[in-house]
Length: 372
Ligand code: SDX
Image (cartoon, rainbow, N blue to C red):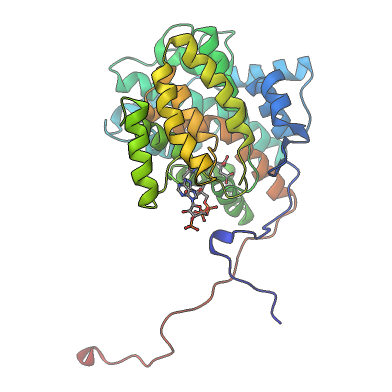
């Protein structure tokens, strides 16, 4: 009996071993640390170091990665010029895909191999944050601004977007989303990065491909799509009427469901608690009515739970961020997980080449053109 079996979307298929994240209904671990523990005790910089090095940083090592992020943050004039020339209506995810690929021509890290790629990952992490902010400024008719010393990566992105030191709560919430989004084993964009790595291609190519995969609304694009959905309603009653109809028509509701989590996404639970506090602090309880009007029937009638993208969309919205920035912020975080997987794939590599079942025409003769 042949061992090959066909599974749409590779559902249930084990495509590799990893020591980076454990993604199960019962737990989500980054390098052995529970996400709830990391979310309450670590910053994004600490988590980025952990993913890339398999250990949490000491104070000295943490300062080291912060110094590297600062060193790599300034954008070259070629990148700024290209951002200016990119058509105004180009979505930020498309801009990121192009700019990450283009910035690869100015890669400042010399050499190949694990250490060089680990350094490249930090360079790209910093560049992506700066590209998002510079594009945001240009889109709003403002000039990009230089980074400010001493800010966290999350605060620096907000500062370079708005030109003012961000409110501490906003910086803290963005940092939390960067921690929650950083890594999630063999999701579609990470698997894309690993496939590209498996041909012995380069890190910048793998990250460019991963950005393309993450853009889709079935994957990272869901945080924008979920917020677009919520923006259609002015009240919980309006949302309730809509979801009743949507479920009757078997529509896909963005921000819900997951291939692995069938009883809830650990990250959504963590972020939802912060979202509810933020909404109350801002007096935005109507948004919670709308949020819960969609959430309730999905959980209690369809038994389909929110994934991280559902609370993230409304969190970013209440922080005043435009929808076009939501999936790019997912990229700003997941670049660390993608890079960790690139390094892991490089160490013990076999090129990915799955099989397929041929369902096309039976063999046939080529007719001369005047008989076609
Ligand atoms: C992310 O893989 C990762 O880890 C991804 C991610 C990460 O950190 O990298 O967690 C980030 O991408 C989260 C997912 C964001 N996407 C969305 O919110 C889009 C909406 N979700 C669905 O498209 C879906 O739930 C997926 C894509 C997330 C999961 O797809 P699966 O595992 O292939 O599930 P499925 O489509 O086979 O659904 C199983 C059943 C179906 O019903 P039947 O057709 O069998 O009757 O559940 C239904 C689906 O219709 N269903 C939904 C639904 N999700 C599943 N019905 C309505 N709305 C939904 N959101």
